[in-house]
Image (cartoon, rainbow, N blue to C red; front, top):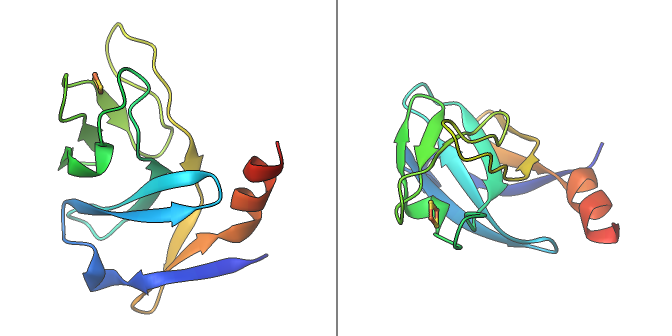
Length: 110
Ligand code: FES
């Protein structure tokens, strides 16, 4: 499996996010209060709100534009609006954040 080093864990603030440019577009890499990391599409499917600027709570993020809440592990929204964002495998190795390059390559080829 091809893992891409995208930075130090402290490059992403606790309960915050950082944008990462990839072949499939801009991703938002989130870090939760429990030091879990998640990578998802940055643009909200509703009207393109930048999810990396949203509020992180638990393993969810609230879109900064119209408050749709997405579960970061599944990409699914909560509530009546059935929006879904793409999720990408990401993990922590020591103090580095690694993004799965195979998943990026598969999506960019689709
Ligand atoms: S743009 Fe995200 S909820 Fe509207």
